[in-house]
Length: 167
Image (cartoon, rainbow, N blue to C red; front, side, top):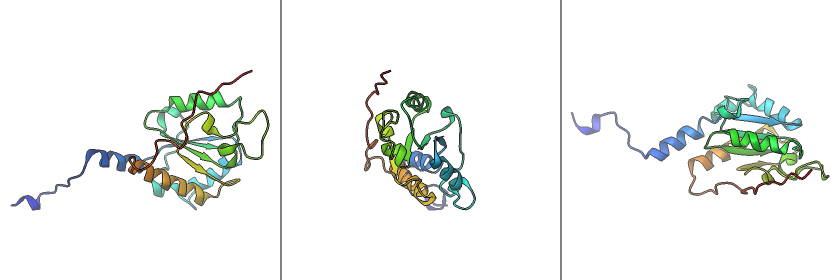
């Protein structure tokens, strides 16, 4: 019996951890508008997000590692969003879903945050109003690539500074 007949597989520890993290995302939706309805369709059997290992939707930030911000975020909601982000365990990732979460959308007024990257760091942006379910799946795949290859992608697209909520 030689060593080649033993059931052994060699790899790096960080590669195994990255493989496990990318294939077991636990998303938490922060849905405030029509983008949240599109996320519901992604979870359904037609598009089936479970093919990508992200079907375990959690509604507690302490049990989630992926925050999907879907919809318009107002300045009144911004501290709540930041607190939810801070309650998530590390490593954590954020997907900004739709034009309202990414840039404020067509709500260019004093109540709407013009992009959630002013509050929390964002890893993947999804365009569209509302974004198609295929775009959400593509964002999951891009995030999985980012998790699998951390040395080739930036930590976050934009590192958010501490927001100032003046009342």
